Image 1 (cartoon, rainbow, N blue to C red):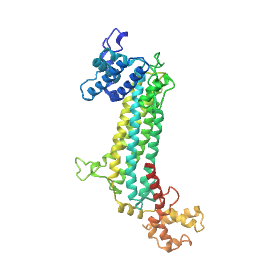
Image 2 (cartoon, rainbow, N blue to C red):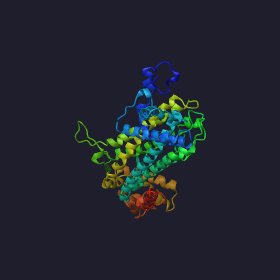
Image 3 (spheres, one colour):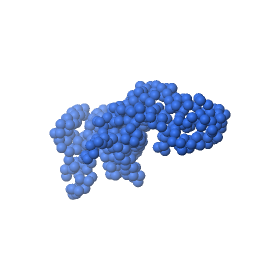
Image 4 (tube, helix red, strand yellow):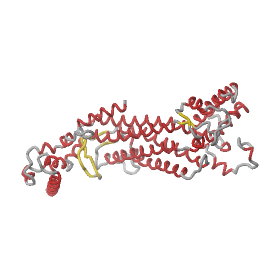
Length: 457
């Protein structure tokens, strides 16, 4: 039998089974991590006297040679060898002879693959966190330029109250800060080493798992060998954080699509992040944010797929777990591409401040400030609310906005109105008046910007 595990079997594997059970088509992405783990493992075996120093040196040299040949496309992976682990072991034996077979002493593919994925996600979690910071920096740079830029704030997609555009952008900054925190917190669970757990029960060899963990930069080792080989919570946690991140990216993308429409014209995306129409030459389509919205679905799908795979599995390792990798890889690649496009798209976005200013001057989003005005003059809020409702209805019937009504019209609803109502209703004053902590008032937005800068620093 040509397979490394073939001693027990009297028949060749069915070719269809061989093709469907092989994972080398996708788990080859773990190649560098697999070799990294193998070098640490054989170093530990030599330290413990399980293999000789000469064998260790030969194996490590062989692994470096195999890695270089793979990177130079001098070696071809085989479905017959099933996965990245057995392909590398076969390459190693071909490279240095039977001594290469000693590498697998004291470990199993079960703890080996789990270790590879822990190493992979550790690296990519840190990379995703760094890319989130790039998007935050782009939002912060735009926000600094638009503290005094006003646009309508919405609830129910109906104009509610005018806000600072900087304040609106910073809402996403803080969403992303929570996202980054989730990823970095997940590292506590990813930074555990399964290697040495064996197939499920540990090994009879006198290995030193803590030494191997130090070699690989892990903070700790799994306390239970069965848990070590069957745990995929760390992948689920990454995918959960990824799903929340993509949801936030999708919300921002939705606003970019809306704001860049002819109906809004609040922003214009750079040409390098848009495409045209094959039939309508006037079109400039916001394809990138649209695509980011759609990519959210596949990240959600990857999370649900793995949850479903794991929900009925008995301990310890099961072949079902081969389905953990493609979704993990796809989620990492989707996040990476999305974040790398989002940061420069925000950074190059042109803000049409005059259109935003016009929008806040042609609505009733300053109505709440009339209520506050009356409350400050002794009217109860409920009375004021009813008065404002009637004022707005009258203005609509007269095809006017609140700043267009004259003082006599205001006094017909309450004798507490005076000339100062017009200062209260100016959009810039409406925004500035919201100076409570975390509010949209320019003074508070400046405080928020300082906090945001310190957070990134």
